Image (cartoon, rainbow, N blue to C red; front, side, top):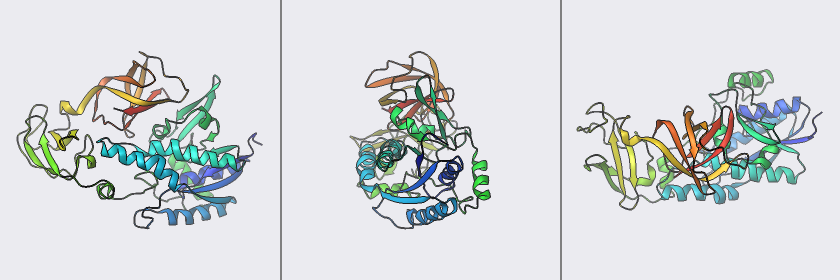
Length: 366
């Protein structure tokens, strides 16, 4: 029997959290399920699947044999996550709401609620791991590298990790689906959810336009300052973006292009003048960066990593680990220098630092 008797599992209605709850029940934990409702602005079935997800959660709990509580964190989400999300976009940056959602809602408001009802631990279906080593808790990459979600969890602290279980740490997705199928869980083959945390899959620009007013401006070539087209607002675009510019087929590429008809990419945004700057060709020098500065630092151990040691880092989720050094660390910011230039480093996104399988933490790219 486990030392901690009760664990509250965040059930989303998907296969991952369902199997996390199932495995903990099989291990002898007293498992309670919790379904979090975090979005109410347009709670329709077209883009927000919360109604169907709740139906799935109730079915999952019935099969596993656990009780489920439904908790509404919508006000906290709007205040702690969504308000920051809009403010960042308005400032021309590209935030990562999933990172903030994890630290502020899933592992803060959720954890506080679980402890208030007498639980010892919380658990989720994230693909990541946690272990105690040398008197501290470490956040680890998952065994399934294609599903690893430690990037989104890098802001978790020692107190949060000490209370958290990740039952899927050593499993591959195919194994998780097989376990679910064997247990008779109808979500065994349910499609993985994507899109913004809790908001669902929807046309992103249309969604953003509901909160940030349209402000038309020029799209200019970074190399020659030619006017190439018009945009609806620089806030709707991000560094490295290719689709949705509607300026394809323009000839006259400059240095760094591999052809006159190469695709255009967003390279810079001038908020003050409302100009979107683009370059032609994926390998254009303006899209490559040898270093970056990060602020709003959060280190899992509570202490920054050693400077001038070789680590790896990601500047976006779906990116291979890149060798780097962390320099000039203080309370406000740090410099991260890469061994090879990185493509489309984007202000507002998170840079996350690793030492082998251990996630050390990171910060927001400035």
